[in-house]
Length: 236
Length: 339
Image 1: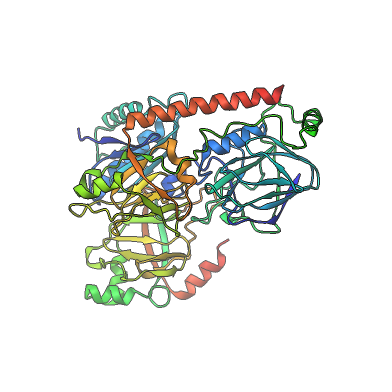
Image 2: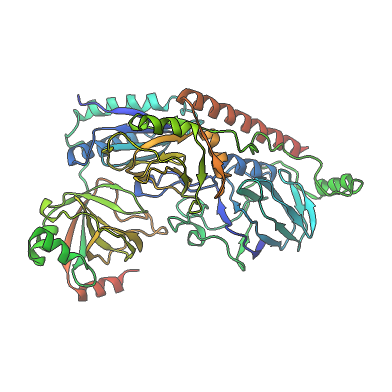
């Protein structure tokens, strides 16, 4: 069976490593491990946070089962993976797919032209390719609710901008290298902005606060500026 | 009971033990930079350990208490005056109704924690009353306190402790003779506040420590680093010898925790604080030992620091020892307060 490594990060956190680099297979393993650990309901576990190839585990060393937690995590994972029949098998959980409306280009996506020029494609072809894929949420990071999405068409890859913008509007859909993501709130950022969604990705007073969770699937649906205004106006 | 902020000080925020269980959504811990100091301040007020206190930075606030209250201040030494009369830190202080609490400048260290009996009852966000200014998250949208803010106190107390009129009368009687209205006793700030700038911070080896060039690795533990002015609760940016990796480190973003020492391409490391990012993709050269995070909390721009290598086992041992000492101290304080 494929292996993972457990590295202590600090006195009360671990990093479980399932591979290196950015690829869907490794990332799926990370999400599978996160599901197994969540289901185990270990009392001293504080956080289980997936990244591309690693899973961060924060725990309370002084809780009843805290001291033994690193060993417990290894045991629970091995048992869980054996039960699932190893990696890369559907472990009984079908990911959610969320459709996200996006108004591409114009003021909403000021870098769409740059992406098109770099790809040597027409702008509507860039939009067609960007909306043709089911992306998977590899991880959330950088800011609360910021999803790193896997699955970008390689033709649309474009390095980050030389000088980052000090203000990227909330909802901006962006391309940074091989990745695509969505700015949940107004933030500084260096990714190329191709469009904007009226969906609210992060609201700390909402339960759950983030629209997307690690492992979710996302599909973008192109909308025009009128639809954007309508949807933005109707949100609470 | 309400507390009005007359002057906010330089950077005053509500903080408890921080958020749990939201890291997978990109939301970090926040919470008091020194959780031990927060717990001691709460113990001195007869509070539960995770009650919300105010974290003050370099220059303390001025607060008016509508009704009588008990407070305690821990962390860096700071001048504490109630209606102009000086009181000791690290002790329960009675604050009469209508009086004004002034907290002065912090000259030695950077941060102190002001607990009030019952805790500050600000609106919890995602299970915590901590402000995360970096993520713009928390009570009051995560912003620092401003003049004109009014905070209510809560009921996060431990049952069975005596904070009634008896304690106050006794205290007043005891202290009249000395002319110094300090309480009868105070907790010993040592070892909770380390007043020794030359003592190095213990550093666990980071995953990429071996990728550092030989001289860089040597400098890491032999040279002093200076805290840059653009440091905050998200991270302390350190200026010192430029640290270089022998070859570019290929890595993708992975989980981060407070105390992590990352090395960006500038070669000047950043030590993450409680509002640090939950993921990052720069080489990891070290992790400040949990027992030395309180010392990280006390470093201000211009201060210097040094690192000393520490094994993981030693760090865990020291962390467990500290927790036992902290639990003993909390119990001793509770015993005093139930007398």
